Length: 182
Image 1 (cartoon, rainbow, N blue to C red):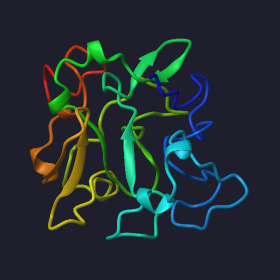
Image 2: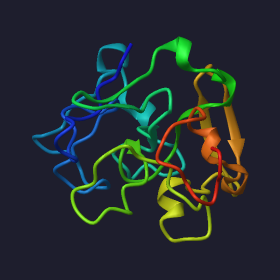
Image 3: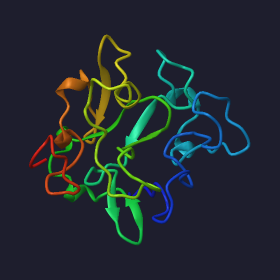
Image 4: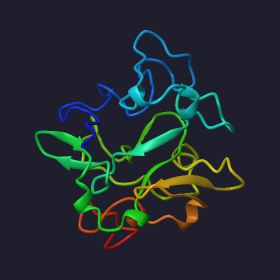
């Protein structure tokens, strides 16, 4: 099922996130009048499911990818960011879709833009060593993060073991110079 993340002509806030979130207050604030239950709301009875027990201050403790070429982040001009069909995911056990995250329930690198960021997006790199890395790949679980893959399995990894190809199928742009061919 395609998951629309946002309108193609705007950046934040998306109309509805996948997880419960209020984009009009700080990520660690109590949700206000703009709170929305998210696309999964009809299937979830307890919003605590979206909070990591190790860091409960965030409205949502996990992010879903909107990286171009990921199973949940295929950029379609004129439409926006949608999920790709199952048949286009060549390596379901090798594609990360949701992971431990701080601040917002969506993730891609939107830092390298001069104005209102526009897709297609890449993963936030480098995966460790900068202040922003702890937002995107928090090492709150014994120096690593939990990653949910497209096939449904979860794996603990250190951010240093991540690659651009961990998040997206080959052949999608934009290229990431530190990871040629990914």
